[in-house]
Length: 601
Ligand code: M6R
Image 1: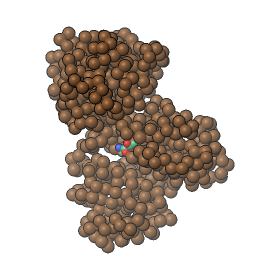
Image 2: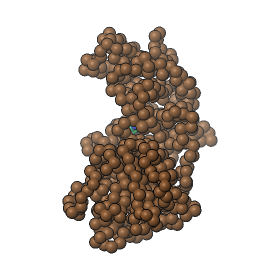
Image 3: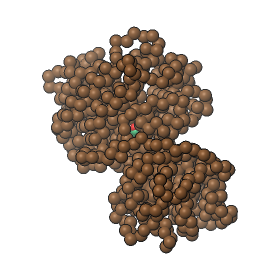
């Protein structure tokens, strides 16, 4: 949440910062700002709203070769120009951007800044005022910056500039992601993720928690908080600049939905050895064999993928699995088994709620595997093992291709474990996934049908119910999340049998109910549930699977192995949500109040 960029070099910095922020806008987009420094001093531009508005607000005539920028997702203080970053110290000498939450900001304010009049409601302003205060006492900017950082509790990625020194950007991080990018020709950059700066460099240095970095035109120095210098190699980010462009698509979400067949094929290719068998890290295999219970920890869509993963692992590998919402697990940990294995599922690998569980269970000495789309991410670095999703950057806030990639990787993991345990399976996941990929392709070609469903069922409604039984119930929850987050229609996913225990009271004339029927064992009973709501006036849309379909079903998805049905049944739901949001003129890729990467708890 929130995105940070910084540049120090020889080119005019405004455009580099603005372009970087455009790429980071998925992290938060309620306000934005940049500060650039030249011989006339610091020039500050801030707006409430998007980067496009910031672009209009920036004075073209101001030229500078160093500066910092920020796009915000509000935590402390409403979205406004005053609360937008960068923030400045009382004298205006220091200017700072911050991503994260400073937990002790009120204590710091009361202890150090009693005589300073704060101009914003943010926790961030306390940091920059503190730098100035400590500089007045210590007389050295680096020392004041380090001392400030040592006083902060919470999560932060920060970048600071000093009006009196155009040669340095001071950065630091704790729990929030931050990278330094290395340029070849006398420039270096700072960025919340590699995507934002891939246009200018593909070489990055990872920063560790509680490190301070001095970024200059011709070099970068990493220090620990005690001033000890740290040497670290850079790495090349394997990102294709075109992956982060929409191309001819109107929205990233639509592009990412369409990429799903390709992603599934890529996963098959990445997890297959030369004998066409599953290729998986032997240590992960051992960990799965050794455990007596798997604990899946995740949030949002990744949590929904975890629910499907539980079925796969329990049915195929016969290992008991619990799936937990990360934000609840931290504060309400269940009794653990003797040999637990934790699996963290996270597209971004940066979700703070999941990370907080990871820190807790590592302290308890338990092993952890992260399944993520970003192998260098915090959750990946801090877990013992990582499985990569190979889905390519997911930019739209609504997660689509990461969900199907997570299920595909979980299926491979489940089968690998089953085989390692000596179970005879009548299920070849690599072959079945290849069938899934073709089915996905045909579904992606049927967008008009999905658009019709969105128009017929969701054009004017205020709410919508999704029903399913068994694994369809999990997909129903994901379908409801997709719809609510981008179209703002209140939507809930229910277990078909649970309706009559309360929720059916909400069904009125024309209430849309979208039911999934892809499971043979519950085909009869889910249809009975549909009859119950229809009898009470609901406008029912049935999405079934070939072989289980009945006359008058609204849409039939191609037949795939029952265990993998979520991979195909979710696609109509993603597309229906997309078109519902489009018809309602919502901002599909950047829904209100949300951010792609939830890096605060
Ligand atoms: O990056 P993660 O997978 O850890 O993110 C978890 C959730 O924030 C995420 O899935 C969220 O629910 C999506 N916006 C849903 O589309």
